[in-house]
Length: 192
Image (cartoon, rainbow, N blue to C red; front, side, top):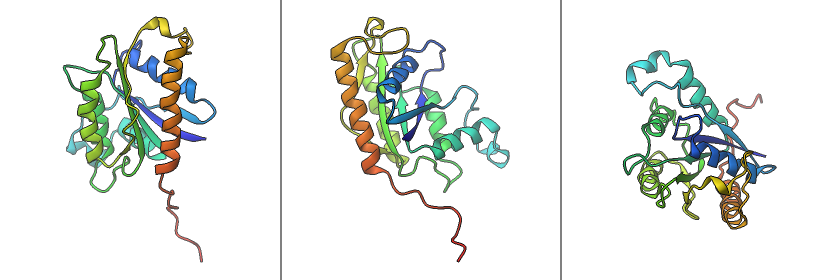
């Protein structure tokens, strides 16, 4: 089973984007293991901290590096994506030569209580993800208008049309990870 590092751009405990990501995780059960990466304790990026990397940053980098893929789940703030995601990306790509996102399969979804479903913010985030070498799945796009009545308390999708739509995304993401994953290189030299 492939491990997916999930980066949610909302820190709020009852975030609809976190709930949305958990619902996608339920649809992926048995094929993908979603691991939610904590972003709330990661300090703002500062080169001065690289010499003695803060523990939350080291954890963030390790969790992303050990994953087979990354899923970004982004709300839209002021027609862009949240600073917490940009901060995670900045730390993940530093120091130079230690980019934990490089060549990693990635997906991007988001939701909003508004009809736009975080579409503009996601488009801004796409331009950054391409620069940091994430192998981003382009289609299908998910700009989801969140309505609580479409989901059960446990995160299961209760509306059949919504479930079919989201299941198509999950199925395609599973295939994307399989198709675009580069073989992991053994860090230890052969003992020949």
